[in-house]
Length: 532
Image 1 (spheres, rainbow, N blue to C red):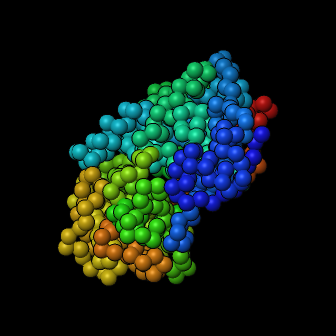
Image 2: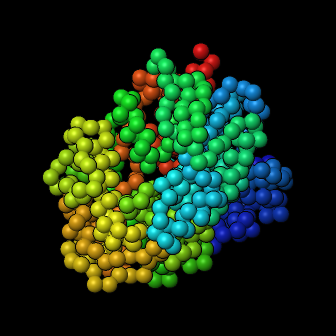
Image 3: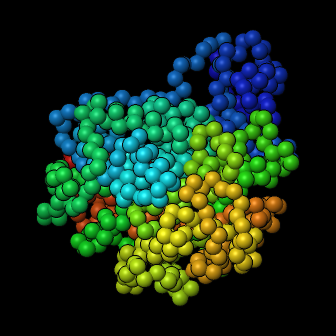
C-alpha cells in the first residue's frame, strides 16, 4: 500500500529516512515495522520564523518496496542515416534539442564553437592564473554553455512552456542526483554537472548524432528565404532545418544577423554587480540564529526584490557557499558571475544584484559610459542594448587595470558614496582592486542599487554591512537581443526552417527554461521537416 502525506518537520527529523519513518509512524499512527520506504517528493525550507521547519511531500510505502529508479527514463533510438537537423550551440537549449530530435527520429548535427566540457577547465584556469581569455573557450562558450561552470541551478519561475519535470528526469537519467526532483530550488553543482553533460553528449553520439567542437558558425546558408545549412570555419554543413541556440554572449552572431537583415530587436535585460558576503553571516541572518545553519540545514539562500524610481532592483542567481568567477568571453572586457559546488560548503555566498534596464533606458544621459574603445551604434539599432553592455564591460576592464582583476567596494562604502581603503577577503581568484564603483557606474544603475541596498538592509537586519563586497560588473543576466520568431511555429519570422532557440535568442533565462525551449524548438523542427 502507498500513502502520500504533506508533513512539516524540524530539520533534524528531515535529515534521514530513518528519522522520517519514526516521525510518520508517530504522527500518522502507523506501525513503524510495516513502513518499508519513505520517498521525498518535494522539499522546501520555511525560515520565516525563529523556529525553522522543513516542508515535505512524502510517499510512504507500506509492506511493499518502491521501484529502484526514482526518475522516469526516456528511450532514445538509433537515428543513423535519418534526416539531419543542425543544432548550433551545445548549451542546455542545444543539447536538449538534440535529444528531442532523436526522439523524433531525426539526426542532430551539433556544432559548438568552444571545446568539450573537460578541456574547458584548462582555459578557465588560465583566466585566473594569467588573466588570458580564450574567445572561443571560456565560462560562456564551450560544451554545456554558460551554465556548465556557473553553478548548475535548475530553478525556474517559467511554468507555461513545457515539462520542467521532464527536463529534471532527463538530468537524472544522465547522472544527476534524484534529489533535484524533490528540492524546491534544485541544484546539481559545478563539480558534478560536467559529467552529466558528457553523458548527454555520449548519448547523442551513441544514437547516431554528431557533435563537433571548435566549430564556429560563420554564416547561415539561405535560399529563397529557406535555410539550407550553415557555413563554419571547417566547411559547409547542409540540412533543411537549423536550431540556433548560441547562448546570450554570441555577439558575433547578433552582428552577423543584423548585417544580413535577419530580423532581430533590442531586448531589455538587467545590469549591476556581484555581491559577496561571508556565508556564515548569511546563515545567521536567514536562520535567525548566531549559530548559523547548524548540523542539519543547508547553506542559506536569499531573494530580494524592490522597485526604485520605476525600475526593478533584485537579487539574481544566488550562490550559497559559492565563489565569484571571471566571465569575460573576449579579451579586453571584464564581467563576473557566481557558481557553487554541489555541497555548497564554501566560506562565501554571493548573488547578482541588478537593475532592470529597458531598451529605451540606454539612450538616457545618466546611462552614458565613458568608453571610446567601443564605437556607438545608432539610437534605433537593434544592437543598442548590446552596445551599452559592451561599453560597460570594457570600462570595467579598464578600471581593473586592464586585467581580470575586478574593481570592488565594500557594500556600506558604496551606499555612502566613498572609496574603500581596504577590501574584505574574497573568493574571486584573479584578485580585487578597490574602486569607487558608485562614481563610475552609470548613475541610472548606481543610484538605484544604493537605494535598493538600503531597503534590503531594512528588510533583513545585518545584510547591509561592510563585511560584504560589491564586485563589478554583472552584465550577462540575459540576452540584450531577441531573434524574432513566430509564436506558433517557433520559426524565424522571415526565414523558413530557422528556429531561434533558448537564452541566446531571447526566449529563456537559465538552464531549465533553455532546455525546455530547446525541446519545443526541436518538436517544431520535426513538424516542419515532416511537412516538406
